[in-house]
Length: 441
Image (tube, rainbow, N blue to C red):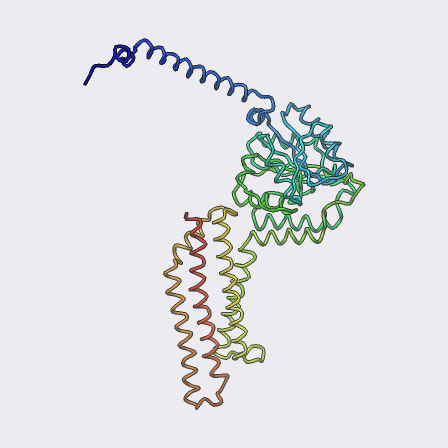
């Protein structure tokens, strides 16, 4: 191989000085890049309207759902702002607008409130949207109809600062509240509200006396844990129920209800419709009262009928026979189905996080495992089929002619009932196991 020309050889030799210079330049570029990034981060976090900064600074967000509330919106916003200003509460007012067309938005913006537009109609949807956008550590919600006095905000904030997760207002005298003349319909004050408040205490152990009071405060952290789903007026009720089920630290403060200040339109509340929706929601969140209690009652009533009809006992001059057995079977089958529905509903609710984990349910599922229920259901089904087969055999012996139905039905009715209970148990056990798979994962 011939030697390279001197110029080429020189060019291919390493140049230490040049390499050192390039490394130094690269180091300086990296240092400059880090400095620029740090500067940008500093500018971003110090931005006045930065969500991170606002979140760390604000203590309270007052959320008001709004649908054409021009009559009263201004006074509600001004009271909330005054209460925060006079008591050194660092906060904001958020108007959760649900499609207002009467100038409510302009009023809110002129007074410095932040407007959040909620496309989905409904009281619950409006509040969910407003609360989700809240920048405060605490949230106080209240209607924008001037029936609640937002000057009472400090009472709620004081309770929240003490560590309570939910602070519920109470307008009724039973909880120390006050209802001014003309502020609440007579049927609401003396029938509907007290009845539903007693129900929520009885069914869900909620330590409150006014389930419908819309003026309440809570921590944003607690609200996020609840995962509320109601879109309508049930939103406020769902908050109370789930907070009670999850053993939340709930406090109650007395408040005053003033007459509705709106003149352009009537209140959004509808007595019969919203009363039914509340009762429906109570039952949906309580499988024990909706399914289990009536189901067990029907099963016991059916067993009582069997115990009297099988031996043909005479009660008040009437002999209980096959017809009593048939009706008793109806009670047993219906009651057993209701008990199964209670198990389905409870398992689903736990799996979906609608209610907290229930150790009692877990113990029951361990005792009544899929395999044990399959065995029990198979035994019941086989026994029932055996009784039906025995009756069929008697019919065959009679040449498939006329039978003594009073005697034969004593075999057929229990057989059909046992077979139905057995098959229900088998398939219900599989269904519950499927429902439980989501929670296990």
